[in-house]
Length: 155
Length: 367
Image: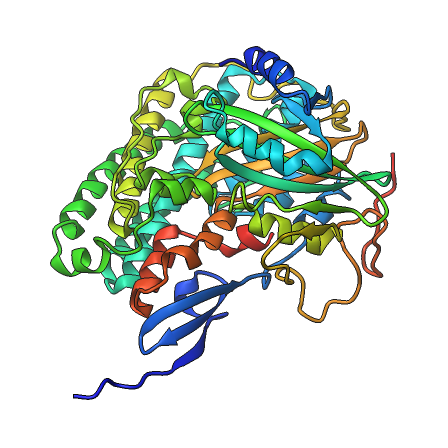
């Protein structure tokens, strides 16, 4: 399946996914937060796709929203896909995809710790990258500042 | 005889345990010498690389990412440059692509040499460590000759490479890969039939292909479990489609197979380097890229086949000269969370063997 075929297949069979132009190399689709886990299950169990491999989850703070981006791949069909979820800036929360891909465990812990995005149905939300007694907020947020963190002048 | 009463107890392995290859604490729950539970505690090397990169221009990110995974710093340079090139749609000159492949594959061999030496040493044989570092030294000399550095290279840049190879590089490189190819045969003769080595590795830490895929394992660990998946072939990048090489795959998924996959891979890398040296064209080594590099808005996730599995960079650009978001993904992060799953019920000595066979490097986990 080529990229164009995958795109038209997803557009016709997955009405919950919306194509996004901002993905420059691989396909990028946006899904609503409530439909995330169901859609991921469907993508994994679809015989034509078999997205059984979760490569990475990244959190993003755009200062207006929080995003979580799921980089998934199919090992047997050699496909790649990005799925993006847009979350509100106040009290962001999302369901865990651990039931779909167990690999999500640590990636979600990291997002919870560094971005402060609440993860529901996660089995082990504890600190692991920051010190245990850390009380200075979520450092990957764009508005986070520290005394020794000097911003470069914008050119 | 009445049954012996046993009691569970907890032991900290690390953070400064030599077999954890860095600073990683494993909290073990034990029953005698048998492991009931392993909990990895990471973060001792967290340097906030991703946050620092958000505050640097694109060319300044490359030396910082060198420290992301310092054993294969070429891959770190490359995966970031590739992401920036895909965003800005830069065409890389032919010669630069060949030089990149040569450097990436030499770096893969150097990294697998470290794996071979330290794994065998962890399991109890010291001699191969000295052999492996002797051979790795030859590759380090080649890198030093090319870019002046032995560990953090800053060699692969956006649009090409930083400088051309010197004249004496090609004969020395041919000699090096020939020697290494012969030495790997020697390593195989030295270890593969050794009864102690076999007893310590065969059947230990078995990883089924289903579990490996579900937990996001990649690279040699996935291939040792019988899944033939190599990003160089299956998600093509650079010019790997021009070379003839095999993808070594083994079926059992134990420590022994993970070791064998890497030894075979080194020999395949030697083949790729030899072919790249034969085909090396003349020409430019760098595309024209403005010093104040500003890619257009957009996002991209690039992934390459590193010696420790899939290495990826998720790069988001907002049109300025600094990355809006840079997320670095290393293979070790996924592999370390797999460790508790497959080390249940084994002995402490086997845990050391399993940990070593995963070839986890902690700077890549903590970032």
